[in-house]
Length: 275
Image (cartoon, rainbow, N blue to C red):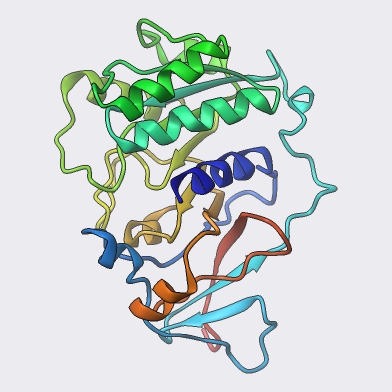
């Protein structure tokens, strides 16, 4: 289940299109306190009369629209379309499962022709994470021994930074080492895009973080979390086309339809009818 979600994360990154700036992208979500609440997305979703099938009204308050991806627009795939060292990506991994997402993300980016470098300062002693690191090492991906001391060094060297430091279990405060990393990522987001996996690192899963990291791209896994309503970046994708129908019915929640055979779907916030 997690591997499908990881693959979807990379699909969203490689389909990262330059649409019109300033459009906040999206939407509603759930509180995360165990599997049950992870799946307890908005309990009621009904199609509004007069809207196209790709638009769904949520609880009378929010509407999300499924955005078809325009393959003719400029994307960051293939890697040769990027400027500077066209394929350079910095993947920042934390000590938990969000960091594991980052390691899997780096592996897929490498397979797609990018040049990921990994900063993974706190290796877990769990076999899963040791295996994920070993896979990256066997694919000749460099692991940075230190984080760049100045924010401009990151912007000068990479076209994309993947934030896989903290996930939905983050309670804070961050240790000084990770707090310093988050501060640098906050400084560079205007010069190089930051992509956060599942939730932006340092955010509370329900209430977000007003003065925290503001990524340009958010990739929610399985379902958007409640804090995604505070996301103000340009692009929001939902990835992980792997939730069994039985669980959707059991927890009475609604996920958007995925186009064709895609494992990702782009979400954008639009006002409810009459507003």
